[in-house]
Image 1 (cartoon, rainbow, N blue to C red):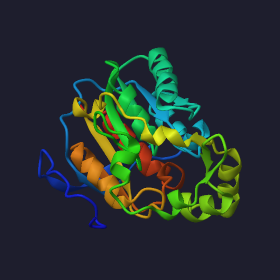
Image 2: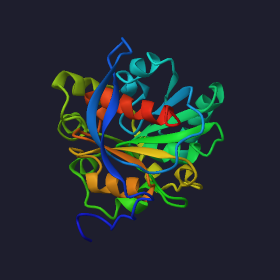
Image 3: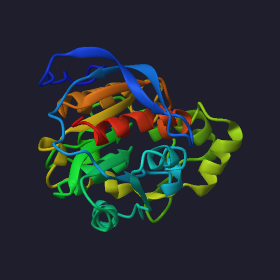
Length: 274
């Protein structure tokens, strides 16, 4: 297999632009501008979103979004950060669906890493108007996470997993520091390692029934310094979705190391009709 990954499908639109990304100043709600490379993809929403559901990935919990949540709330959006059990795709989708049911639509559904699989399935809900994939896995209908991941070279992070006798996988503390969040201070990665949610390894072989991104607009944050998911993989699936792509020079956790840039992408998705 070519280490650069499969040939990506062409974007529905060939426009490639350097645009000012909308950033939020912490707590104040003031907008700042920062340049980001993006690729215009699916059609915009017809109505601005009122609510955001954040879905964490493996080796994490709902607190992973703590730096992004106040930036979204400062813009008047209602936010729920789901606490996934990480026991099966069906269980995680059910938890996400309960969060969707509690909120007024339209809703932007945001997934990080494994959370991308969850939002791909849960996003078929009619209240969901857009999807944001943050360094995330994005299967097609009938695919599991591993179906496409296996087509790319294994990463240092995934090679370091510690799987117990019950099949639950965690990241050793050293790998959290070196591969999961290498752009964060050691004190912070130690907390991440201690509070991570183990994931049932079999989740990665459980297929999505219907991929929501086939009928709804998607945004994708591609993390250039990712050691958990190959950046080439992230770009491949983002292009396949015809997503709006935003490149961030980050580890696997840009919502922790670059929260304003991640919030900017979510806000763009929420306000895409304006």
